[in-house]
Length: 177
Image (cartoon, rainbow, N blue to C red; front, side):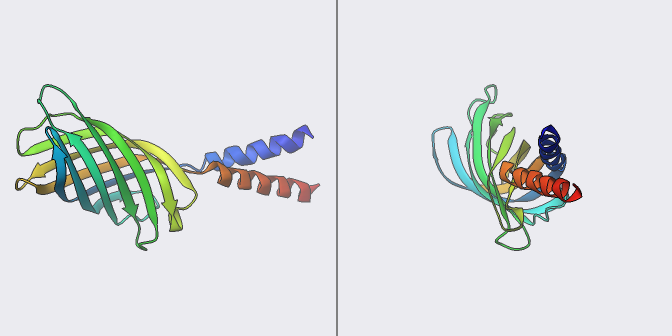
């Protein structure tokens, strides 16, 4: 019986070893849609310019909130972004949080933080993961401008997917006996 559980554990571990590192560098537009005081709320749509990894992301769309106060004091940054594949049904949704690390000088702000997967559909279903993100927003006008955005990290199968891999390993073991 211990061999049986060892095989299941090896199958699950092998699935975890299949984690994929990826990097997406995007650029596009953002728009300020609201906010109060030093906090702005906005949307952004970017086109993938640089990508390493097997996922085929083509655009990134999302909403964000950024606290742009005194340049000497870091403010908060948070957002929800959809990384969209060639098929509009292929969507990896991530939630990000971090800080605006350069304050605000009326024409620019940047931010850095972390992200994690909160949803995955289509070709990306069954993936989870986390990593780092950073970005810079340059104002062309009062309420809009240009954004450069980078997402990097690791995507892995969900625990349910790992369980299926373990069951497949168990079935292979039983066939050999």
